[in-house]
Length: 130
Image 1 (tube, one colour):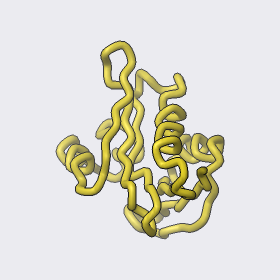
Image 2 (cartoon, one colour; image 1 turned 135 degrees about the vertical axis):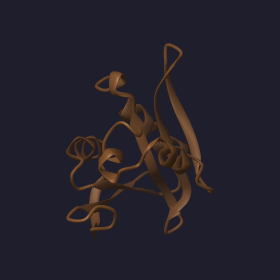
Image 3 (cartoon, one colour; image 1 turned 135 degrees about the horizontal axis):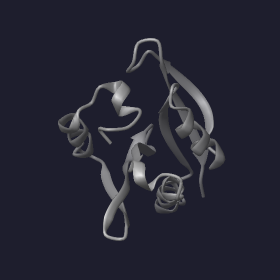
């Protein structure tokens, strides 16, 4: 997490990244590949207007391109099936993540200008799940 985008741009070191993973009210799930941590997803079950919210998702550099990010998103959607909606934020500069979310049916619903990084936005994405 600390060694990849968007956390590099956020200037979050290892200690700050770990603190995010211990946020109260969130659930951390880890993806493993041959006994090595390949990625994780941090979920807030009641994070956005009471709906599930993907607080963070990351895939290790050596595990990218193998569908792990997609598997983590599907896991979250299945976990909250029946809740109706799921939300996430993605940085305007993080094109690779935006493409992943679009492929999975997430749609742009709003923008938080200069929310974290000056000159950049956090894009609010939503998907209806059942």
